[in-house]
Image (cartoon, rainbow, N blue to C red):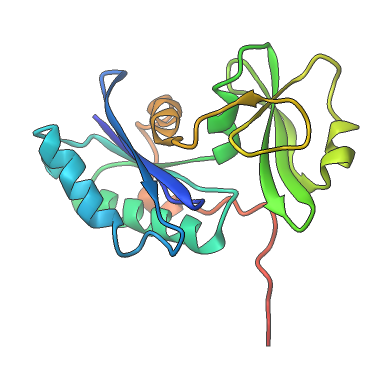
Length: 200
């Protein structure tokens, strides 16, 4: 049983996966942040599916790229739950989750990074990272990707893309299931790609 959380963007999600089968995925909209609603929504999700926290075998979080605050909220929740339950915790890149919605052998997930830039990467159909995750202008990114690469995005991008859903938690859970056995919650870290701004 895997409980997955994505709070990295304005639209987030929660998912429960049991033996590879999706029990439920919930989309959350929190333009002002997830801190106030995450745990109430988690409690409702577990109650609806008659699942107790002690039955969760692994906790997973989308670890970015995305909102710095949102990434931290999701990671802190998953770390705390996993450490309290004595269970493993896994961080999954949003870009890897988005890539899983493609259909071609080579996929380029793209996320709007604002400031005229995107977060992007190249993944294989098997989820292998072929080119590192980057932040750069869309045109510059498109110039680096191989021909016949499938662009995949949940955002409105200025080029044709395969649409991924806003809710990524189920995809995060499925990816996490592949590496759940030996993942230490203390080792969970954010995948910001772009460094946060530092202001005096």
